[in-house]
Image (cartoon, rainbow, N blue to C red):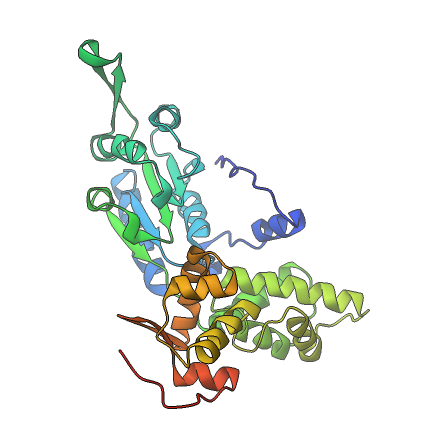
Length: 340
């Protein structure tokens, strides 16, 4: 089976990118967590194999770093299919999509990452391709324009997105199955780290891996990234074993606390508590006060803070909760007014 490689992106650490690929599971039984999704996928794939058909189009959504791309690789491997990879930003014109679709063969899988960033015209071109395996090509302009229909092979599209709300209803309805990936438990993250440590040949105490798991934001990608930084620190300290003390020292250097909060996360909590006495405060005010983009605060930091129950959204803005106040050890000057 052939698998094309994803487009190269500029990386601060190319070694990390290579290691991420090396740590990717090769089989479903190596893929830890997401049990409900795995069970449903296995039934879908087994049924398609028994009918000797291509699998239905699949939409996978959820926060970044939970394994959406990994699932696409595993599905392709399980089906013995060729996997082509692209992204919503790479498909700028309908012609870009057409050139890819016409090069596919029966049973091939096209994985589109960040599908919510597809151009509207490209998305509409996908409709007949997904539903009737037909590509409509417009030749000419104005009154002399003609539509040419090109038959396509029985392919499968697997799309991944972190922003499913940005997909139109007609587009979502063309996917036969829709899977949502949830955050992992600390126990699942620890198991993932145990496997990663073996692959990276890191001699690590279980307590050290549990310490990293606590700070991983319930996300395998973040956990593996922290494990590699802890390995680097232990190596610089000439230690052949990754201990819980070395893991703690690494996390302190990275300014990551025991809940996985980074410096910016804590700044957001302190800004709401200290500048606005706990809130409510609008997202634009928060981003301006911290010199961050609105989208960065709303898409990167806020979801995890809400997952922990440290902040809440209200009709009038964001408020910090009692749990959030306890975490940053701040007591409000007066009782916080609640607008939930």
